[in-house]
Image: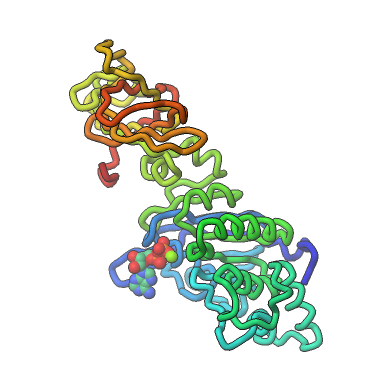
Amino acid sequence: MRSGPTQADLAHLRIAGLHKAFGEFLAVDGVSLDISAGTLGTLLGPSGCGKTTTLRIVAGLEQPDSGRVELGGSVLCATGSPMIPPEGRRIGMVFQSYAVWPHMTAAENVAFPLQARKVFRSEIAGKVKEALRLVRLEAHADRYPGQLSGGQQQRVALARAIVFEPRLLLLDEPLSNLDASLREEMRIEIRSLQQRLGMTTLFVTHDQDEALSLSDTVAIMQRGRIVQAGRPRDVYERPTTPFVARFVGWKNFLRARVADSATVHVGDVPLALQSGGLSRGTEVDLCIRPEELFIRDASNGSDRDERELAGEVIAQLYKATHADLEVLVAGRMLSARVPASAEFVRGQPIFVRLAPEHVLMFPADTDLDP
Ligand SMILES: Nc1ncnc2c1ncn2[C@@H]1O[C@H](COP(=O)(O)OP(=O)(O)O)[C@@H](O)[C@H]1O
Ligand SMILES: [Mg+2]
């Protein structure tokens, strides 16, 4: 096993215009994505949006109806040309289910791809040992999967995926079956291994936290399409659709209607907010993060400010560093971050101010649940 990437190994992944239908159903609908050599890109989206199908096409386990996949300049598949079979692609893959073989020891599992690739027997032991060392399992080489924890089995799967020095690593929700603390730990391990080996990696997850913390680039998928891609921070701070906003953690949504250039109506309540050129009468979704909602008590009979909405407290959830205040405003539940020392009571009338510079306004997405 190498200690670091060589120039020839650095492989840029280029996916262009992939389509794949199952019967009438379009599972992948024009996916294009670039992952620079040595970086980690993530497909993030809800269950059923086409992530696994995209990954399987890249791996060669599925043939696309159209589109093209290139790795390090060589074409793996393209409309009209013969497809390179999976074993000819030098791609390592880890599945959510681990898929380690129960009747083989950890070392035998890891040796398997080398044997399948007809690597000289004299080289296999050394490579297996190094791969197991990289995933910190060298002491467990002779154990069977049944004698290993879930996290350790997942590490065997990871060692097996990297032992033949793949040019690309594909990870399909590899952490979803692990408990929360182990998931965090494995997340850090995968990222550090990927960076040390300089391995181009395509990671798939439905967990926004995982995607934002692991990735160099993140692509949000919805119904077979990539709706936004970019650096995690950019996508988080500037989502371009309400779907993306919700998916990366903008919790609060209000439906409103543009009244004039400086006012929207939430229900029949006017709220001072610039409508950014949207025409009068347009239905919009207002998105705002919990830390940009400001709550004040309304039980003393004070008047509503034009930048505020009236609501009522539903619950206050203590979180050590702060508290999450759940409030009901215009028929929607909103979540605000307040100091841990705040003492709101259920049913208490409040006013909510939306920091206008932090409100995102989109034409209403009728697909978005209220
Ligand atoms: N072999 C298949 N035959 C029919 N439908 C499939 C097949 N594979 C996937 N699908 C459908 O394609 C859609 C996308 O699936 P998938 O790529 O597994 O999504 P994800 O990994 O994002 O959850 C789903 O609706 C799924 O039911
Ligand atoms: Mg999947």
